[in-house]
Structure formats: structure tokens, C-alpha cells
Amino acid sequence: RGPGPDISSRPAPPSRSCPPFLLRIASHRIAMTAGGSTIITSISSSIIANLRTRAATLLNPRKKKATIPHLKSLTTCTSTSDDHLVVERTGTRQQSRRKRRRPERVDPLTKPPGPETFPKWAFEKKDFFSFEVIYQSKLSNARVGRIHTPHGVVDTPGFVPVATNGTLKAVDHRAADSTNCQLMFCNSYHLLIQPGPEVVESAGGLHKFINRDRPLITDSGGFQVFSLSGTAEDDGLKTKSLAKRRHERSLLKVTEEGAAFLSYRDGRKILLTPESSVQAQKAYGADIIVPLDELLPVNVDEERLLHSVYLTHRWEARSLREHLKDVRAQAMYCVIHGGMNFNLRKMSVDYLTSLPFDGWAVGGSLGRDREDMVKLLKFTMPLLPKEKPVHLLGIADLDSISEIVPLGVDTFDSCYPTRIARHGNVLTSRGKIKLPKSIFDKDFSKLDDTCSCFTCQNYTRAYLNHLMKAKEPVASTLLTIHNLQYMNDKMAWFRHQILHGKL
Image (cartoon, rainbow, N blue to C red):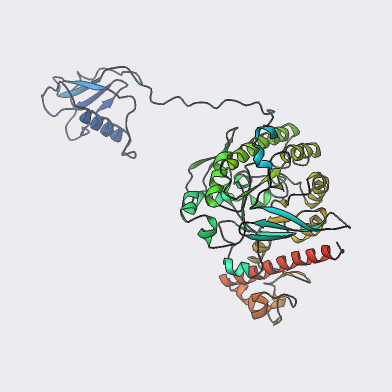
């Protein structure tokens, strides 16, 4: 700090203890041993660069390519009687760091742009995506429908399995397709970190990359960014089950621009904005994409929740505008927010349904338990226009499905059936069973007599029980195939009940 004392009059230390290059760096001079009495009057630019790099390396050997930012113009050197070479810095001092441009602060209650700011053609029907209602129940709000996408039809009500990294855990796509899986959900957050949108795009899009020619839906990545950043015990129905230790506190900052977080793979900083999220999903090329939104836990105060809803609306409007620049035969669903505040839910429905989205997704915090979720959906579902499909984000366990299908939800995604299969839990027509229990050691019957899946047609409970206890990886594959078949058969049963006036 500062120029430091004059060292030109000090005797040179013994050569064996003297550093080969650098003795001292001050803010405006460098003193070096010359090894002789030669007087140097000028130094070329290449030598100056070499001096700067070598000096910084000696100061910090770990940073071999370091430089000294404030030594920008070294021009003259003089020798002293003590065989020291003093290099003086001339010229004006330059700042070592550039001033970062601070983002403009935005009033958290700033209203999002209205529907009049979007092009009129965006409100017209799409020829590549449509939804038809085949039958509307007279006993409830349940309905049977079909979603038409560029890669096939999705029958509704329908279960959507989650292929986190472009694949279902332990199951190949052909095995999943054999269980009648139609729409599959892939996570943009994980694909963004590995392998990256540029790799997927180079392969020709996600369908070709994973070799699956059926409908796909990708999310914005925001759900994982917020839910995996560390949650509390009372954070709600969806978020607390996703707080993994290796992801905790990965979220750095949320601003008007977007959300900054650290990659759980290599620790690099990533800024996810509404525009970059849509651009990534364009690279993936899924049939249905989702705008960026902010996910808050259920236990936030009303003011923070209000600010979040406004921010989410502004982000979703920006996402939609970016999507409309290059539609690429993709549909975009909005995400209804508002937490457990019914007034905010209505405000979110009123605004987002006024924009040219192709479908509605119910997201955000859905309450602390299933009772809260059902209460919320009973309020929200009647507010949504009927001509477009409705997707429930992140909820698809059996008990929940039985209650939300009569409310009119068309599709719902969850990793529930595949996750519990890897732990030995099997879904059957007689209820869920825990296969590793000893009562199945000598049970040579099928998992489910009513099931037509590959597992049930070829293996017994006793054999699968053995595989689980032996920790054989194939056990996860076989049980996952069965659970997928059970879920899809269950959805076919719901559609049959609705069509025949029983639900």
C-alpha cells in the first residue's frame, strides 16, 4: 500500500537467498536484481508484459497466468550502485477493476405488460397444437380430451412421467413406451447444466438426442433453481421433498433480470433469465414449453407473495415475448401463481389467461398438504377458460389424482411412481405393497393379476423380492416398468369412468 520506502540504498542480499527475479513490489515501482552494473534505459512492450506476468507469479505461485492490473505502462529502468535494478512506472494509474453496471431497480409492484402489447396473430389458433374435449362429465368437472402435438396425441386425463435428465430413472424409452407413456416431462435445469442446450441442439433437438418420437414437455428450470436452494420443514407440499444436501444454498440472487445460481456440478455461476430459459427450451425443441417463474415456500408473508406474483407475471410476459419471436411449432403454457392467497390466484388467472398462451399450468406453492391443494384447486379450476388444457405441476400421487381428476385437471407430472419403485414399493389393484418384506420370500404369484406389463408376465414376487434384497439394479427397472403400466392403466380407467357417466 503506497509507494513504500526507498530500497535503492539497501545492500543486495546474498545471491543464494535472493529471489531470482523479484525483491519488492510497491504501488508504483518494482525492484529487481540485475546481477551486474548494466544500465537499461528502455524496455520493449513484450519485455514489460513478461515482467508483469513473472512478478505476479512470484507473488502468488498458484496463479501462474496472473497479471498485475495496475502496472500498465513501464517505460524506464535505472541501475543503482548496489546492483539493484529499479523499474519505475510512468503514466496515469488505471483502475484495476471496471465499474460494474448496476441494474436499475424496479418497483416490485410494477404491473406487467397488457395483452394489447402482443401481436394479434399470437391470439389465433395454432395449426400444430390444439385441444379437443371429447366428453364433459355431467357429474363433475372431469372431462376426457385429446391434446394434439407435432409428435402425437396425448389422451387426457393423463399421467406425465418425469424424465429428469432426458430419461426415466432405470428405464429405457422403449420400455416406457410399451406401458403406453405418451407425454414425458424433461427438466431444463438439469439439461442446462449437463449436457447443455448447445449439445442437444447440435443433435437435432431433444427428440433426436434421446431417440424418442413422442410428445415432450420441458419446464423453465426455475422450479429446480428455487426448490433445490434449501428449504425448511414447513416449506410446503412440493418444495421440501426436493431439498437435497448437495444443492442447498445454490441460489445466489433473484433480481428483475432473473435468478443467479451455482451449478451443482462444477460450481460455476449461471444466470437464468426469462429469455435464456426460453432460448434453452428452443434448443431442446419440446412440444410444450413453460415460462420462467419464481417459486416461493408456503410460509412467506403476504407482501413478499404479492411482490413475487408481480415478478412472475413480468417474467412470464418476457418469456412469452421471447417465444413469439420464433415459435418453432412449440406451445407455451403459462403458470398460475398466488400461493394459498385466493385473491392473488384470481389476479394471476385474470392476467395470464388474457395473454396468448396455449394452455394453463397451475404452479407455485400448493399448500402444506393435500387438503390445502384440493381446496386451492376447487377455487382455481372454475376460473380457467375451458377451451385450453390444464396441467398441474409436480403432483401425481394416486390419492391426489383421485381427488383432482373430478376437478377438471387434464395432465399432471410427477416422479412419484418411478421413485417409489426404486425403493421396492409396488402399486397394485389391491393397494401398494413393500416388496422387500419377508412375507414375499416364497410368494410365487405375479405382482398384480390384472396387469399386462412385461414384469408381471415374466417374474414372480419371490424373484423380485430376491433382486431387491440382493440390490440388483435390474430390480429398479422391472418395478418401474410395472408402476408406469399401473399409472397408465389407472388413467385409462378414469377416462372410461368419465365416458360412461360414473365420474
